[in-house]
Image (cartoon, rainbow, N blue to C red):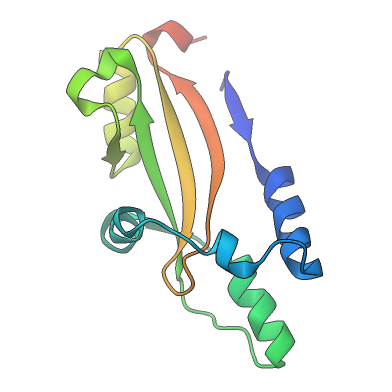
Amino acid sequence: MRGVIDYRIARRALVRQVTRGVVPVTDVCDAHPELLRAARNVGQATARTCPICRLADDRADVALDEADTLRLVTYVFGDDLRRLSGHVVWTREELDDLASRHRSFTAYVIECCLVCGWNHLVESCLLGRAHIG
């Protein structure tokens, strides 16, 4: 897929800064209430664990929580989308449908922890008929 930007390196760097105490936990666990609501109600569960909750569990020397509290939420933005710009996409099928009906837009995938409020951009990608190929 063309036009995909992966933010894993930025995520690792930020978690490292939190681990070292350079960035306070309160600065990274600040998910907006609407993002938390979307994550809780329509977010996709992921096999990954929240890096901040894992850090807290490690520091407290307790077993890792295996609950699926880290969710992925996809938002779409673009002039072609008109009233749909800024909306949450619930399923991959809905995203594919938007891509087939609109010329160009950007989808942003954000991970959000339901426990601590960690949130970070996972990836962004250009979608739509103009980007097929």
